Image (cartoon, rainbow, N blue to C red):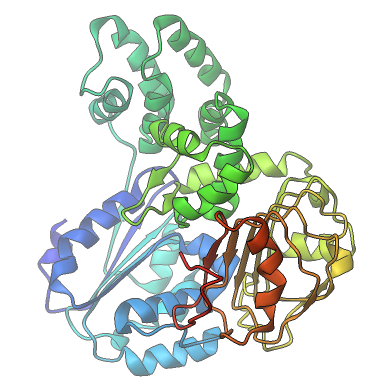
Length: 457
């Protein structure tokens, strides 16, 4: 793409737009990697649409600050972040890729205006909405369209046959699948992986199912691959879609192993079916379309009553269920987070939500709990005994919980927390430690040096 390389005299804003699953991120990442060795200060922030909803804009600002300045947790709300970046980024030559932007406000809080950076900087934006690029005034925009038939045939064949063209007996069936996929790279990869190694009869049956789904309903087509998974693989897929994108698979596997989900086999199956990828640092990765599919499957468990679903991640639904004491034994995993509300910048030391023991009494099946920007208080006896993974980010020094005896605990994650060696919470987790001495894994702030009774991953 010549326009990125040939105008080093200017600060360029480049936008790539197109429908979901079309390959915008792949294209943008290719450009980013090609240019990255020319920039000392660079940042690639993926999936802004999701991170904005779940973590808040100040979380994204902190990621950008760390990438550019190598400084952690500098800001606690978006206004503070905008001012900090305006003063510290001024005059720096940067390469920034902002992936899956769906609101121009996100761009204003992350990159301000083009005068913030020095000449020669490059800002690459991917979005499904061309209007956002028009509002921010990009220098170049590029619509990433569907692959043509020949490109689609090669990509599909690589996943279905591990070569660039189909065997003669599969040529006609391959053309049918390629047509159904509509030039979408994600669909071509998933369908190819689904049919890899299958016989002609299975191919014909799968094509019949795909043809029943309306052409534009990509999610329903992708769901056919989900439906062939066994139960344990489905649980791992849904956990990743709802909670664990970007999480180290080795840590998540401790919980899945304790649940009897056979994580090594399950992760490999999902990877072979192109439903997930594994990053260079062992992180679990999933395409946005597949993430949305997984979450919709969970919502379909009960559209009207979130308390009767297996997983809760939306802040409004979580607060409604817990604040009204509507929790049920169907709930297996929950995120309690103040910061996932748009514009929120609260910390545990501020007046964030406080959750008490009675709100957890009926959550008998709870195995994963993530707490961020919220506090727990009260006597939790007999409330969370089946908990397997507690991810308490930004845990406050003031520990207000009694009898927090999670006997089945396998992972205790306290990263980004304000605790030290004298934190009163340590004693509450000794029961789990003594019960599962060889299996409990503890992730703590790197500055803490605790006794040999506790180990750090």
